[in-house]
Image (cartoon, rainbow, N blue to C red; front, side, top):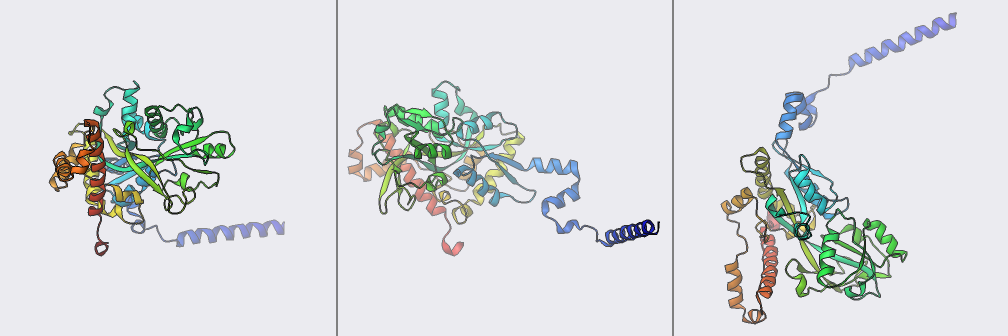
Length: 392
């Protein structure tokens, strides 16, 4: 009995000390928490919900490890501005899926897609006049095409009839691969495998090649190391020149796959920051306008570390053939005297370069050369936009 009484008194003592300790704790000070949490204390749940939704722009990016998802993170890092603007990147599933997400997924305002994806969907009969439903904020950067195969494969034509993995069908890699191989008259046996799985199957000899498309340095390609494999060149042949650009990969880009001092020629396809074609008097258009002003104003910050090196290729004014630019973006560029590459300047270039002009034998040749001229001008413009070391 005495033992039970002692235990009860001990329990009461502990309970009283806990109550006293809680009473001694200072009240939580909202001023010490972040701005986002202060907003909750300040406005309450209903007003906070309205404020957050009014100024949040959602951006569908890409799969983990890809360049799109890194660009989405960079945009959020620079543009988030308290309650004035919030950029919410969403991990996506690839370019084809992103097209569908921009069109149909509630709450998605922007997305990063590949320039050849819309053309492919329309030409294959999956969509009609799809480009009219989209606008673009800016062309971002060029994504290089990688063909990984055994060192015995020295020409892409050797993959005819071979097992070639082109990533999952909701991404854009299979679209680019399908277009390129079709135009070159090569007919591989396509397999739709996630890239890491595909690379392991290639190591095991179960498939012959893996195709990847992404902005360098592309993580899955950079991480691949096996002395039996290399990157196969993709020549910038005439059938590819209407939709693609010439590109080169060096040993500095991929030392595991390219011998020191060597280079591998390939092609590249533009990545596009795209949006649904909202009417100007809608709230969704207002949010896009808010995003554009912040993005274009702060753009030079993206071209310095620690952000992805592909930002250095971006020129806000670079045109995108057959696409319509978001009107508020077009107006911003005009207001700030940011000039796009013009046909007149290209024609003047040809007049001053008779040797180059003599190589143009047809309208297709001229159009291909103009695209290369655009890419060169855009890269030069991007370097000009980058702040000098003294400004950093």
